Image 1 (cartoon, rainbow, N blue to C red):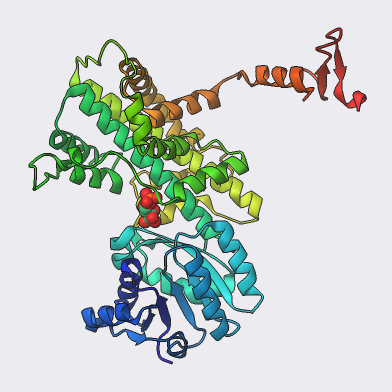
Image 2: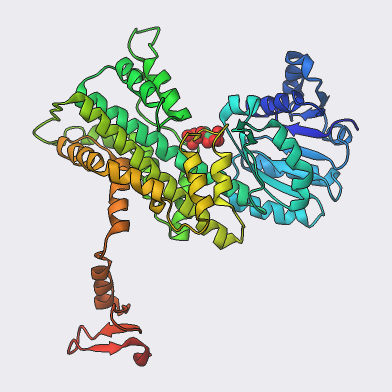
Length: 479
Ligand code: 6PG
Protein backbone atom coordinates (compact mmCIF):
# COMPACT_ATOMS: atom_id res chain seq x y z
CA UNK A 1 0.00 0.00 0.00
CA UNK A 2 1.66 3.20 -1.18
CA UNK A 3 -1.07 5.68 -2.13
CA UNK A 4 -2.36 8.15 0.48
CA UNK A 5 -5.38 8.98 -1.65
CA UNK A 6 -7.41 7.27 -4.36
CA UNK A 7 -9.83 8.45 -7.02
CA UNK A 8 -12.60 6.29 -8.47
CA UNK A 9 -14.11 7.32 -11.80
CA UNK A 10 -11.84 8.43 -14.62
CA UNK A 11 -14.18 10.68 -16.61
CA UNK A 12 -12.85 14.22 -17.05
CA UNK A 13 -13.69 15.51 -13.56
CA UNK A 14 -12.20 12.42 -11.89
CA UNK A 15 -9.03 12.27 -13.95
CA UNK A 16 -8.46 16.01 -13.59
CA UNK A 17 -8.90 15.82 -9.83
CA UNK A 18 -6.51 12.85 -9.71
CA UNK A 19 -3.94 14.83 -11.74
CA UNK A 20 -4.39 17.81 -9.43
CA UNK A 21 -3.79 15.56 -6.39
CA UNK A 22 -0.75 13.95 -8.01
CA UNK A 23 0.78 17.34 -8.76
CA UNK A 24 0.94 18.27 -5.06
CA UNK A 25 3.93 17.48 -2.85
CA UNK A 26 3.53 14.39 -0.73
CA UNK A 27 0.60 12.82 -2.54
CA UNK A 28 0.67 9.47 -4.19
CA UNK A 29 -2.57 8.78 -6.07
CA UNK A 30 -4.34 5.49 -6.72
CA UNK A 31 -6.87 5.39 -9.56
CA UNK A 32 -9.64 3.03 -10.58
CA UNK A 33 -12.43 3.04 -13.14
CA UNK A 34 -15.12 0.42 -13.72
CA UNK A 35 -14.03 -0.08 -17.31
CA UNK A 36 -10.23 -0.56 -17.25
CA UNK A 37 -9.73 0.93 -20.73
CA UNK A 38 -10.26 4.39 -19.27
CA UNK A 39 -7.78 3.79 -16.46
CA UNK A 40 -5.20 2.61 -19.00
CA UNK A 41 -5.83 5.63 -21.21
CA UNK A 42 -5.36 8.05 -18.30
CA UNK A 43 -2.21 6.26 -17.11
CA UNK A 44 -0.61 6.35 -20.53
CA UNK A 45 -1.67 9.93 -21.25
CA UNK A 46 -0.22 11.25 -17.98
CA UNK A 47 2.82 9.11 -17.19
CA UNK A 48 4.36 11.84 -15.03
CA UNK A 49 1.47 11.75 -12.54
CA UNK A 50 2.83 8.48 -11.17
CA UNK A 51 -0.66 7.03 -10.80
CA UNK A 52 -0.97 3.67 -9.10
CA UNK A 53 -3.59 2.16 -11.38
CA UNK A 54 -5.78 -0.80 -10.51
CA UNK A 55 -8.17 -2.83 -12.62
CA UNK A 56 -10.12 -4.32 -9.74
CA UNK A 57 -11.60 -2.73 -6.66
CA UNK A 58 -9.64 -5.21 -4.49
CA UNK A 59 -6.31 -4.09 -5.98
CA UNK A 60 -7.36 -0.46 -5.67
CA UNK A 61 -8.13 -0.87 -1.97
CA UNK A 62 -4.87 -2.77 -1.43
CA UNK A 63 -2.92 0.09 -3.03
CA UNK A 64 -4.14 2.58 -0.39
CA UNK A 65 -2.30 3.23 2.85
CA UNK A 66 -4.26 3.48 6.11
CA UNK A 67 -6.52 5.28 6.85
CA UNK A 68 -7.63 4.50 3.32
CA UNK A 69 -9.12 7.53 1.63
CA UNK A 70 -10.97 7.34 -1.68
CA UNK A 71 -12.79 10.06 -3.60
CA UNK A 72 -15.66 8.86 -5.77
CA UNK A 73 -16.06 10.91 -8.94
CA UNK A 74 -18.87 9.17 -10.77
CA UNK A 75 -22.15 10.51 -12.12
CA UNK A 76 -24.45 11.19 -9.16
CA UNK A 77 -27.17 8.58 -8.64
CA UNK A 78 -27.33 4.79 -8.50
CA UNK A 79 -23.72 4.49 -9.67
CA UNK A 80 -22.59 6.24 -6.50
CA UNK A 81 -24.43 3.73 -4.30
CA UNK A 82 -22.86 0.83 -6.18
CA UNK A 83 -19.33 2.16 -5.63
CA UNK A 84 -20.03 2.94 -1.97
CA UNK A 85 -21.23 -0.63 -1.46
CA UNK A 86 -18.09 -2.02 -3.06
CA UNK A 87 -15.86 0.16 -0.92
CA UNK A 88 -17.64 -0.57 2.36
CA UNK A 89 -17.09 -4.27 1.66
CA UNK A 90 -13.34 -3.80 1.53
CA UNK A 91 -12.64 -0.77 3.74
CA UNK A 92 -12.05 -0.91 7.49
CA UNK A 93 -13.30 1.25 10.37
CA UNK A 94 -11.55 4.62 10.30
CA UNK A 95 -11.18 4.63 6.50
CA UNK A 96 -12.76 7.45 4.53
CA UNK A 97 -15.11 7.39 1.54
CA UNK A 98 -15.61 10.75 -0.15
CA UNK A 99 -18.38 11.38 -2.67
CA UNK A 100 -17.21 14.29 -4.83
CA UNK A 101 -20.21 14.26 -7.17
CA UNK A 102 -23.23 16.55 -7.25
CA UNK A 103 -25.27 14.32 -4.93
CA UNK A 104 -28.61 15.37 -3.50
CA UNK A 105 -27.89 16.23 0.14
CA UNK A 106 -30.65 13.95 1.45
CA UNK A 107 -28.95 11.05 -0.35
CA UNK A 108 -25.72 12.07 1.37
CA UNK A 109 -27.45 12.10 4.76
CA UNK A 110 -28.80 8.60 4.06
CA UNK A 111 -25.45 7.28 2.82
CA UNK A 112 -23.48 8.81 5.68
CA UNK A 113 -25.80 7.20 8.20
CA UNK A 114 -25.50 3.77 6.59
CA UNK A 115 -21.72 3.94 6.14
CA UNK A 116 -21.14 5.26 9.67
CA UNK A 117 -22.67 2.07 11.07
CA UNK A 118 -19.70 0.16 9.67
CA UNK A 119 -17.24 2.50 11.40
CA UNK A 120 -16.12 3.89 8.06
CA UNK A 121 -16.29 7.65 7.54
CA UNK A 122 -18.41 9.06 4.75
CA UNK A 123 -17.85 12.55 3.43
CA UNK A 124 -20.14 14.26 0.92
CA UNK A 125 -18.03 16.92 -0.76
CA UNK A 126 -19.38 19.49 -3.20
CA UNK A 127 -16.71 20.32 -5.75
CA UNK A 128 -17.13 23.37 -7.95
CA UNK A 129 -15.15 24.82 -10.79
CA UNK A 130 -15.85 22.54 -13.69
CA UNK A 131 -13.12 20.60 -15.48
CA UNK A 132 -10.53 23.32 -15.21
CA UNK A 133 -11.23 23.84 -11.51
CA UNK A 134 -10.79 20.13 -10.82
CA UNK A 135 -7.39 20.24 -12.49
CA UNK A 136 -6.03 23.55 -11.25
CA UNK A 137 -7.89 24.18 -8.01
CA UNK A 138 -11.60 23.89 -7.26
CA UNK A 139 -13.69 25.26 -4.43
CA UNK A 140 -14.50 22.31 -2.17
CA UNK A 141 -17.44 22.00 0.24
CA UNK A 142 -17.00 18.85 2.34
CA UNK A 143 -19.49 17.60 4.91
CA UNK A 144 -18.73 14.78 7.32
CA UNK A 145 -17.23 13.89 10.68
CA UNK A 146 -14.48 15.87 12.39
CA UNK A 147 -12.40 12.69 12.42
CA UNK A 148 -12.56 12.41 8.64
CA UNK A 149 -11.73 16.10 8.24
CA UNK A 150 -8.51 15.59 10.20
CA UNK A 151 -7.10 13.30 7.52
CA UNK A 152 -8.91 14.75 4.55
CA UNK A 153 -8.56 18.46 5.39
CA UNK A 154 -4.84 18.78 4.57
CA UNK A 155 -5.26 16.81 1.33
CA UNK A 156 -8.18 18.96 0.16
CA UNK A 157 -6.38 22.14 1.20
CA UNK A 158 -3.45 21.11 -0.96
CA UNK A 159 -5.57 20.90 -4.13
CA UNK A 160 -8.16 23.66 -3.59
CA UNK A 161 -8.07 27.05 -5.27
CA UNK A 162 -6.40 29.78 -3.26
CA UNK A 163 -8.07 33.14 -2.68
CA UNK A 164 -6.10 35.86 -0.94
CA UNK A 165 -3.72 33.29 0.49
CA UNK A 166 -6.43 30.99 1.85
CA UNK A 167 -7.44 27.62 0.40
CA UNK A 168 -11.04 27.53 -0.82
CA UNK A 169 -12.15 24.63 1.35
CA UNK A 170 -13.59 24.39 4.84
CA UNK A 171 -15.27 21.71 6.91
CA UNK A 172 -18.84 22.82 6.19
CA UNK A 173 -20.60 20.62 8.74
CA UNK A 174 -21.68 17.03 9.34
CA UNK A 175 -23.23 14.55 6.88
CA UNK A 176 -25.13 16.35 4.08
CA UNK A 177 -23.98 19.90 4.93
CA UNK A 178 -21.39 20.05 2.16
CA UNK A 179 -23.71 18.85 -0.58
CA UNK A 180 -26.44 21.15 0.72
CA UNK A 181 -24.15 24.16 0.41
CA UNK A 182 -23.00 23.00 -3.04
CA UNK A 183 -26.65 22.70 -4.08
CA UNK A 184 -27.35 26.30 -3.01
CA UNK A 185 -24.13 27.36 -4.77
CA UNK A 186 -25.60 25.92 -7.96
CA UNK A 187 -28.93 27.67 -7.34
CA UNK A 188 -27.08 30.97 -7.08
CA UNK A 189 -25.13 29.98 -10.20
CA UNK A 190 -28.44 29.58 -12.07
CA UNK A 191 -29.65 32.99 -10.86
CA UNK A 192 -26.38 34.70 -11.71
CA UNK A 193 -26.37 33.21 -15.21
CA UNK A 194 -29.99 34.18 -15.84
CA UNK A 195 -29.42 37.74 -14.62
CA UNK A 196 -26.43 38.12 -16.93
CA UNK A 197 -28.49 36.68 -19.79
CA UNK A 198 -31.28 39.19 -19.12
CA UNK A 199 -28.75 42.04 -19.03
CA UNK A 200 -27.39 40.95 -22.40
CA UNK A 201 -30.87 40.65 -23.90
CA UNK A 202 -31.93 44.08 -22.65
CA UNK A 203 -28.82 45.75 -24.02
CA UNK A 204 -29.13 43.99 -27.34
CA UNK A 205 -32.81 44.77 -27.81
CA UNK A 206 -32.60 48.22 -26.26
CA UNK A 207 -29.58 49.49 -28.17
CA UNK A 208 -29.19 47.20 -31.16
CA UNK A 209 -25.55 46.63 -30.28
CA UNK A 210 -23.88 43.54 -31.73
CA UNK A 211 -22.82 40.62 -29.54
CA UNK A 212 -19.17 41.63 -30.02
CA UNK A 213 -19.96 45.15 -28.82
CA UNK A 214 -21.83 43.76 -25.85
CA UNK A 215 -18.83 41.52 -25.14
CA UNK A 216 -16.80 44.71 -24.71
CA UNK A 217 -19.36 46.03 -22.23
CA UNK A 218 -19.12 42.87 -20.13
CA UNK A 219 -15.34 42.95 -20.31
CA UNK A 220 -15.49 46.51 -19.04
CA UNK A 221 -17.89 45.55 -16.23
CA UNK A 222 -15.44 42.85 -15.28
CA UNK A 223 -12.89 45.49 -14.30
CA UNK A 224 -15.25 46.89 -11.64
CA UNK A 225 -17.40 45.77 -8.74
CA UNK A 226 -19.13 43.11 -10.88
CA UNK A 227 -15.83 41.34 -11.53
CA UNK A 228 -16.56 37.62 -11.59
CA UNK A 229 -15.91 34.44 -13.48
CA UNK A 230 -19.37 34.38 -15.07
CA UNK A 231 -19.11 37.97 -16.36
CA UNK A 232 -15.66 37.17 -17.71
CA UNK A 233 -16.76 34.08 -19.65
CA UNK A 234 -19.88 35.88 -20.89
CA UNK A 235 -17.65 38.32 -22.76
CA UNK A 236 -15.80 35.37 -24.31
CA UNK A 237 -18.99 33.63 -25.38
CA UNK A 238 -20.44 36.81 -26.92
CA UNK A 239 -17.25 37.53 -28.84
CA UNK A 240 -17.07 34.08 -30.41
CA UNK A 241 -17.74 33.91 -34.15
CA UNK A 242 -19.13 30.72 -35.68
CA UNK A 243 -16.66 29.31 -38.20
CA UNK A 244 -19.24 27.72 -40.50
CA UNK A 245 -21.62 30.68 -40.85
CA UNK A 246 -19.44 33.63 -39.85
CA UNK A 247 -22.26 34.74 -37.56
CA UNK A 248 -21.86 35.45 -33.86
CA UNK A 249 -21.91 32.01 -32.22
CA UNK A 250 -24.62 33.20 -29.82
CA UNK A 251 -26.97 33.58 -32.82
CA UNK A 252 -26.59 29.99 -33.96
CA UNK A 253 -26.86 28.33 -30.54
CA UNK A 254 -30.36 26.91 -30.01
CA UNK A 255 -32.07 29.04 -27.35
CA UNK A 256 -33.21 26.15 -25.14
CA UNK A 257 -31.29 25.95 -21.87
CA UNK A 258 -30.49 22.58 -20.33
CA UNK A 259 -30.23 21.70 -16.66
CA UNK A 260 -28.98 18.74 -14.70
CA UNK A 261 -31.24 19.32 -11.73
CA UNK A 262 -29.27 21.03 -8.98
CA UNK A 263 -31.08 24.34 -9.54
CA UNK A 264 -34.43 22.59 -9.28
CA UNK A 265 -33.27 20.87 -6.06
CA UNK A 266 -32.38 24.25 -4.58
CA UNK A 267 -35.89 25.50 -5.26
CA UNK A 268 -37.64 22.30 -4.17
CA UNK A 269 -35.70 22.35 -0.91
CA UNK A 270 -36.42 26.05 -0.41
CA UNK A 271 -40.13 25.36 -0.87
CA UNK A 272 -39.96 22.68 1.83
CA UNK A 273 -38.07 25.01 4.14
CA UNK A 274 -40.41 27.93 3.35
CA UNK A 275 -37.62 30.18 2.10
CA UNK A 276 -38.44 32.58 -0.75
CA UNK A 277 -35.61 32.03 -3.22
CA UNK A 278 -37.65 33.72 -5.92
CA UNK A 279 -34.70 34.86 -8.04
CA UNK A 280 -33.29 31.36 -8.18
CA UNK A 281 -36.74 29.92 -8.90
CA UNK A 282 -37.25 32.32 -11.83
CA UNK A 283 -33.86 31.30 -13.21
CA UNK A 284 -34.84 27.62 -13.09
CA UNK A 285 -38.25 28.35 -14.63
CA UNK A 286 -36.68 30.52 -17.34
CA UNK A 287 -34.67 27.49 -18.46
CA UNK A 288 -37.84 25.36 -18.42
CA UNK A 289 -39.77 27.93 -20.44
CA UNK A 290 -36.99 28.15 -23.01
CA UNK A 291 -37.07 24.39 -23.47
CA UNK A 292 -40.75 24.16 -24.43
CA UNK A 293 -40.64 24.58 -28.23
CA UNK A 294 -44.25 23.53 -28.83
CA UNK A 295 -45.63 26.06 -26.36
CA UNK A 296 -43.31 28.76 -27.62
CA UNK A 297 -44.33 28.11 -31.23
CA UNK A 298 -48.02 28.17 -30.34
CA UNK A 299 -47.59 31.42 -28.41
CA UNK A 300 -45.36 33.15 -30.94
CA UNK A 301 -48.29 34.99 -32.50
CA UNK A 302 -49.62 36.37 -29.21
CA UNK A 303 -49.73 40.17 -29.21
CA UNK A 304 -46.95 42.20 -27.62
CA UNK A 305 -46.78 45.88 -26.74
CA UNK A 306 -47.31 48.46 -29.47
CA UNK A 307 -43.99 50.16 -28.87
CA UNK A 308 -40.43 48.97 -28.57
CA UNK A 309 -37.90 50.49 -26.21
CA UNK A 310 -36.58 53.81 -27.45
CA UNK A 311 -33.36 54.17 -25.56
CA UNK A 312 -32.27 57.78 -25.87
CA UNK A 313 -29.11 57.84 -23.84
CA UNK A 314 -27.31 54.58 -24.56
CA UNK A 315 -24.61 55.00 -21.93
CA UNK A 316 -27.11 55.87 -19.21
CA UNK A 317 -29.24 52.88 -20.21
CA UNK A 318 -26.29 50.50 -20.06
CA UNK A 319 -25.38 51.85 -16.65
CA UNK A 320 -28.99 51.27 -15.53
CA UNK A 321 -28.73 47.66 -16.67
CA UNK A 322 -25.45 47.25 -14.80
CA UNK A 323 -26.99 48.62 -11.61
CA UNK A 324 -30.06 46.41 -11.99
CA UNK A 325 -27.79 43.42 -12.45
CA UNK A 326 -25.74 44.23 -9.37
CA UNK A 327 -28.79 44.77 -7.15
CA UNK A 328 -30.52 41.61 -8.40
CA UNK A 329 -27.34 39.64 -7.87
CA UNK A 330 -27.21 40.76 -4.25
CA UNK A 331 -30.78 39.54 -3.84
CA UNK A 332 -29.87 36.14 -5.30
CA UNK A 333 -27.01 35.70 -2.83
CA UNK A 334 -29.12 37.00 0.03
CA UNK A 335 -31.81 34.44 -0.77
CA UNK A 336 -29.24 31.68 -1.15
CA UNK A 337 -27.72 32.44 2.23
CA UNK A 338 -31.21 32.48 3.76
CA UNK A 339 -31.65 28.96 2.48
CA UNK A 340 -28.33 27.87 3.96
CA UNK A 341 -29.33 29.31 7.33
CA UNK A 342 -32.69 27.52 7.22
CA UNK A 343 -31.10 24.25 6.10
CA UNK A 344 -28.53 24.44 8.88
CA UNK A 345 -31.28 24.94 11.40
CA UNK A 346 -33.44 22.16 10.02
CA UNK A 347 -30.65 19.59 9.79
CA UNK A 348 -28.59 20.63 12.81
CA UNK A 349 -25.49 21.89 11.01
CA UNK A 350 -23.18 24.53 12.41
CA UNK A 351 -22.46 26.35 9.16
CA UNK A 352 -20.33 29.49 9.28
CA UNK A 353 -21.79 31.77 6.63
CA UNK A 354 -18.68 33.94 6.42
CA UNK A 355 -16.55 30.87 5.76
CA UNK A 356 -18.85 29.78 2.95
CA UNK A 357 -18.50 33.18 1.26
CA UNK A 358 -14.73 32.82 1.72
CA UNK A 359 -14.44 29.44 0.02
CA UNK A 360 -16.55 30.72 -2.89
CA UNK A 361 -14.05 33.50 -3.60
CA UNK A 362 -11.88 31.24 -5.73
CA UNK A 363 -12.20 28.11 -7.86
CA UNK A 364 -15.96 27.92 -8.15
CA UNK A 365 -18.32 29.03 -10.90
CA UNK A 366 -19.83 31.88 -8.84
CA UNK A 367 -16.48 33.29 -7.73
CA UNK A 368 -16.73 37.04 -7.61
CA UNK A 369 -15.03 40.06 -6.16
CA UNK A 370 -18.00 41.00 -4.00
CA UNK A 371 -17.89 37.74 -2.01
CA UNK A 372 -15.31 39.45 0.20
CA UNK A 373 -18.05 41.88 1.18
CA UNK A 374 -20.32 38.99 2.15
CA UNK A 375 -17.60 37.55 4.38
CA UNK A 376 -17.13 40.96 5.98
CA UNK A 377 -20.87 41.37 6.51
CA UNK A 378 -21.09 38.05 8.38
CA UNK A 379 -17.86 38.73 10.28
CA UNK A 380 -19.32 42.01 11.48
CA UNK A 381 -22.64 40.48 12.37
CA UNK A 382 -22.82 36.66 12.45
CA UNK A 383 -26.56 36.86 13.21
CA UNK A 384 -27.37 39.01 10.20
CA UNK A 385 -30.93 37.97 9.27
CA UNK A 386 -30.83 39.02 5.63
CA UNK A 387 -27.67 39.78 3.70
CA UNK A 388 -29.36 42.60 1.83
CA UNK A 389 -29.78 44.46 5.13
CA UNK A 390 -26.02 44.62 5.84
CA UNK A 391 -24.89 48.27 5.56
CA UNK A 392 -22.59 47.71 2.58
CA UNK A 393 -25.33 46.00 0.56
CA UNK A 394 -28.04 48.42 1.62
CA UNK A 395 -25.90 51.22 0.25
CA UNK A 396 -25.46 49.50 -3.09
CA UNK A 397 -29.12 48.71 -3.42
CA UNK A 398 -30.12 52.27 -2.47
CA UNK A 399 -27.81 53.63 -5.13
CA UNK A 400 -29.07 51.12 -7.67
CA UNK A 401 -32.78 51.17 -7.06
CA UNK A 402 -33.79 53.96 -9.46
CA UNK A 403 -31.93 52.23 -12.27
CA UNK A 404 -33.37 48.88 -11.24
CA UNK A 405 -36.93 50.24 -11.35
CA UNK A 406 -36.41 51.92 -14.73
CA UNK A 407 -35.11 48.69 -16.21
CA UNK A 408 -37.87 46.47 -14.82
CA UNK A 409 -40.58 48.97 -15.84
CA UNK A 410 -39.06 49.49 -19.28
CA UNK A 411 -38.73 45.76 -19.85
CA UNK A 412 -42.40 45.24 -18.95
CA UNK A 413 -43.52 48.09 -21.18
CA UNK A 414 -41.55 46.95 -24.17
CA UNK A 415 -42.32 43.25 -23.79
CA UNK A 416 -38.81 42.03 -22.97
CA UNK A 417 -38.91 39.16 -20.49
CA UNK A 418 -36.80 39.91 -17.42
CA UNK A 419 -38.11 37.40 -14.87
CA UNK A 420 -35.08 37.37 -12.59
CA UNK A 421 -34.63 41.16 -12.60
CA UNK A 422 -38.29 41.78 -11.85
CA UNK A 423 -38.79 39.05 -9.27
CA UNK A 424 -35.70 40.26 -7.40
CA UNK A 425 -37.11 43.76 -7.31
CA UNK A 426 -40.49 42.48 -6.11
CA UNK A 427 -38.75 40.51 -3.39
CA UNK A 428 -36.87 43.62 -2.33
CA UNK A 429 -40.05 45.68 -2.20
CA UNK A 430 -41.90 42.91 -0.40
CA UNK A 431 -39.21 42.57 2.21
CA UNK A 432 -39.03 46.26 2.96
CA UNK A 433 -42.80 46.84 2.95
CA UNK A 434 -44.36 48.22 6.06
CA UNK A 435 -47.61 46.34 5.51
CA UNK A 436 -48.16 43.44 3.13
CA UNK A 437 -51.44 42.29 1.60
CA UNK A 438 -50.78 39.03 3.44
CA UNK A 439 -53.36 40.48 5.85
CA UNK A 440 -55.97 40.09 3.13
CA UNK A 441 -54.87 36.52 2.42
CA UNK A 442 -55.37 35.78 6.11
CA UNK A 443 -58.84 37.33 5.93
CA UNK A 444 -59.73 35.18 2.93
CA UNK A 445 -58.42 32.04 4.62
CA UNK A 446 -60.47 32.81 7.67
CA UNK A 447 -63.55 33.45 5.52
CA UNK A 448 -63.64 30.18 3.61
CA UNK A 449 -61.91 27.84 5.99
CA UNK A 450 -61.99 29.36 9.47
CA UNK A 451 -58.21 29.25 9.35
CA UNK A 452 -58.04 32.08 11.95
CA UNK A 453 -55.78 35.13 12.09
CA UNK A 454 -53.77 37.09 14.59
CA UNK A 455 -54.25 40.79 15.31
CA UNK A 456 -51.79 43.65 15.34
CA UNK A 457 -53.17 45.06 18.59
CA UNK A 458 -53.59 42.11 20.92
CA UNK A 459 -52.35 38.59 21.61
CA UNK A 460 -54.38 35.55 20.66
CA UNK A 461 -55.90 33.81 17.67
CA UNK A 462 -59.17 35.06 16.20
CA UNK A 463 -61.95 34.10 13.85
CA UNK A 464 -64.75 36.18 12.42
CA UNK A 465 -68.15 34.45 12.19
CA UNK A 466 -68.43 35.18 8.47
CA UNK A 467 -71.60 33.18 7.89
CA UNK A 468 -73.16 34.31 11.15
CA UNK A 469 -73.40 37.78 12.63
CA UNK A 470 -69.81 38.61 11.62
CA UNK A 471 -68.71 39.23 15.13
CA UNK A 472 -65.22 38.21 16.12
CA UNK A 473 -64.53 35.35 18.47
CA UNK A 474 -61.43 34.22 20.22
CA UNK A 475 -60.53 31.12 18.19
CA UNK A 476 -59.09 29.29 21.18
CA UNK A 477 -62.50 29.46 22.91
CA UNK A 478 -64.27 27.73 20.01
CA UNK A 479 -62.14 24.58 20.22
C1 6PG B 1 -19.83 23.75 -10.66
C2 6PG B 1 -21.11 23.56 -11.44
C3 6PG B 1 -21.31 22.15 -11.85
C4 6PG B 1 -22.63 21.92 -12.58
C5 6PG B 1 -22.69 22.51 -13.93
C6 6PG B 1 -23.87 22.08 -14.76
O1 6PG B 1 -19.96 24.30 -9.56
O2 6PG B 1 -18.75 23.41 -11.13
O3 6PG B 1 -22.18 23.95 -10.66
O4 6PG B 1 -21.26 21.36 -10.70
O5 6PG B 1 -22.82 20.58 -12.72
O6 6PG B 1 -22.64 23.89 -13.83
O7 6PG B 1 -25.09 22.45 -14.23
P1 6PG B 1 -26.39 22.47 -15.15
O8 6PG B 1 -26.20 21.46 -16.23
O9 6PG B 1 -27.52 22.11 -14.26
O10 6PG B 1 -26.48 23.85 -15.70
